[in-house]
Picture 1 (cartoon, each protein chain N blue to C red):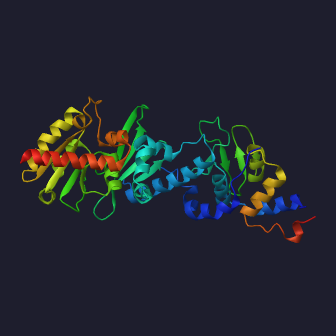
Picture 2: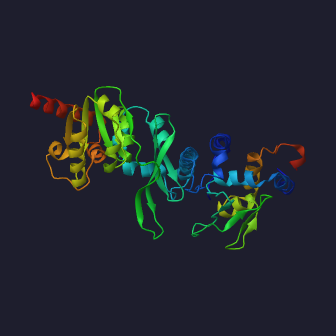
Picture 3: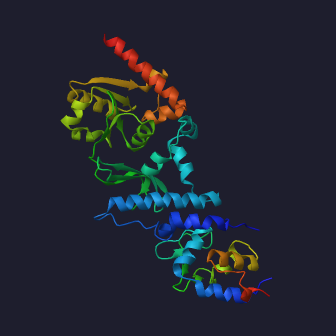
Length: 262
Length: 101
């Protein structure tokens, strides 16, 4: 015999997801889309999907999908509450059964929403299908060491780490980095992805960040190993599995590169 | 002991499309904006629908009933227990003497 959810939970359920219990699967038209509303719907959809998955192991579980991006080991190593960041940035698309990541501008309005794994009309997989402005450069500069983040999951990871960053959604968007932002970056730390287009990006960044100290973190050298194509900072952190160790290794590498320059 | 027949009648008078959708979501069904959902796991697209008066029909296999029937048949809960469960979720006072035998 099956069991039902404890009815004591019903008032909490109603309070949190009531207005979205019926509407959360609604995928608004992409024409003139209100991204803030879409983002809210995706966040609520994730909560509801989690409720459902907690009671039914056959359902897709957003938390399990999250561990495909950031390993459980890595997330646990933060030793702080990650839910404010994760609940702010990560939603769930019922249409594509996939996690989504949102990008905010300086006014905390949504500028871009990207769906990790969508599909097109031919049912071909589309990675990071996005709505909104791909050209948006977001940044958080609170000290002299600014990390360059390229890609959606990198944005979330740097937010979890609560460090200074400049974020571009893809390689080609580097052209949109303003001179004002360039001037604010005393030291720029580029987390190098293992592919040729990223090497080309590094050259271009070196041309525009003329007065900035640029540090290039090459994970091949850190790991002293050949790496698969596309290996990036998120892969590195998942491999290490401990954010404190990652931060130590980055610090040591920065110190080493600084000494080499003298 | 309860007068389940009377209780069930009271429950049906309290159904709305929205509160039935809420309860179905609560117990694990995904309801879309058109109040459609999959009652059976082997469905590819939702065949069941919640009517304006809160009744449920599965156009795939012909099931027709209310949420108490759904819980009884699809969650394998005894009818009496399903009746009490839904009554409580709808805030019906089951201890009212009219429902007692």
